[in-house]
Image: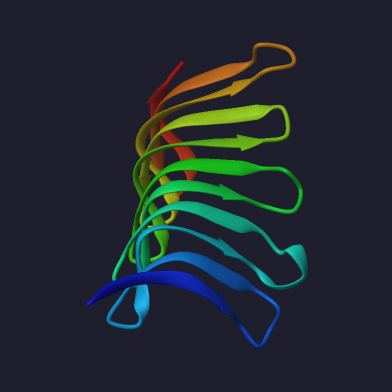
Length: 121
């Protein structure tokens, strides 16, 4: 059964959005305790699917998720650095582009376990 509403967690976090079988489902916003980040986007049976996570520092990830980890195609903005590309089980994966918005430094190529690996420019 689908429904919607707001739930306040004991630790101070909250979820506001769709529910199904007691789990976040559909569109919703989840905030961590004491401002420890926020996810806004689609949920499927308690897991993030497609949306934006914002850390307290202002860093963001916008893209797809699987089983609570960044997975698929996404973009991470971290300070002056932006990474656009593939993610695998929470790590930068296979192929992507990392670029500094300040000085234009750029790496485009392959990645393994979140690190530059193999061929790239």
